Image 1 (cartoon, rainbow, N blue to C red):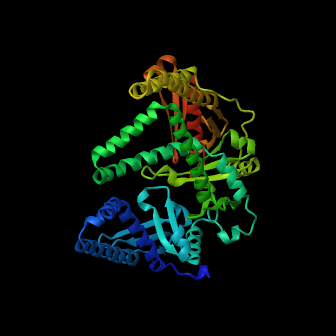
Image 2: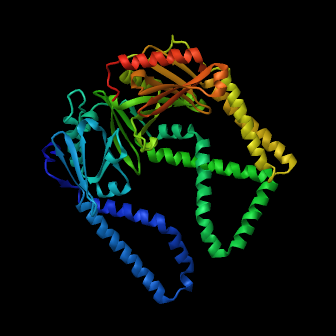
Image 3: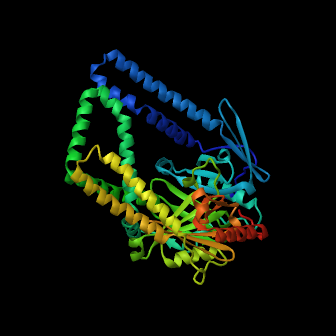
Length: 501
């Protein structure tokens, strides 16, 4: 039984962890040297047999070195429970000892990538809200060991903070369970423009990486000729350019489908004892228990297609340090319907009804600033277009850009608002998508009024709220109202007796 496992003495990971560590180091080496491997393959026919033999011996030597290093990393990674702290010792030459008090631990999560699933072990991530140096990842434990360790850590806290084991949680029917049909709906309604931009950035980065390789392989002059011919072909035909855009858009939509299925496959979402349990993933399975107290704020996001299907997605924002990427502490639940959203808000907040609260909009100066930015962006694009398009094509491109950018900025202005109740703040925003952010004011760590020279002339200011999970900005509010908000939020923070974590 998991509760019989003793963590009072130093323990190592599962022996299978050597495979995980080996794979991780090997991946890093391949990522750094794939260009050299590609060059060797292309030039192999011109090398002598003795040089090829030396190369193979070198590969074998590197693989053996990685294996020895993996074993030493495994052997020198030890952990235990000492009173109310988690203690870790690691390091081959430079030894590193870390102790984390239980009350600083934010989450204890499980995950499984493909290799974990093949050898039947789990990665256990111990997260804190402090420095990223105290983030701990145990690469390989059996399920019983992982459950026992999480239970030991959570049982070491007060009864109010403790969380039940997940085998108790799954006895009840999950609040939300996403099947293949639901994932198809989610995929169709994803932000495909974002996928297109990510794909374009990836292709550009990939081209930059392989450019030097092809210059050595086929010659710099020949490569430049191919690139220039491609550019001339694209810039000379808007139809061909449009065809390329349609092709990339189709690829982006397909990538959205793949990303959603890999990340959210078999998603289940449960609520029990002031905590959320999330399980999801195909190639990288994750089991997360998120305590109510650790949620800084939530953002509910939808778009026209999602609204027609009656679904949204929720982002839970947790406390982060300055060195940790925001995406690392971001938890996303897709396919939520209205009843799911109401249940989440009911669990997190005592009062979240903003129906009778006045909706407030930014000052007209915010619209003026958006129009000015739009003009500057179009001017920058025109400088670029001047060198690659003729006059007629440049007009068409400008009209197209003006429609796209103008529509996006109009939607951004129309959707931006905020509502302030006694203890909570609701902020609306978005351009293509529509977001609603719910924040309890006592979670705010710092509030300030920011005012530029141009804003001071018009008696407007920005109110910036700093939480442990990032900033929330209320732009271009009348100066008097900004001061009222500042005083109200500051008073709520100082008089609240609730813990922000």
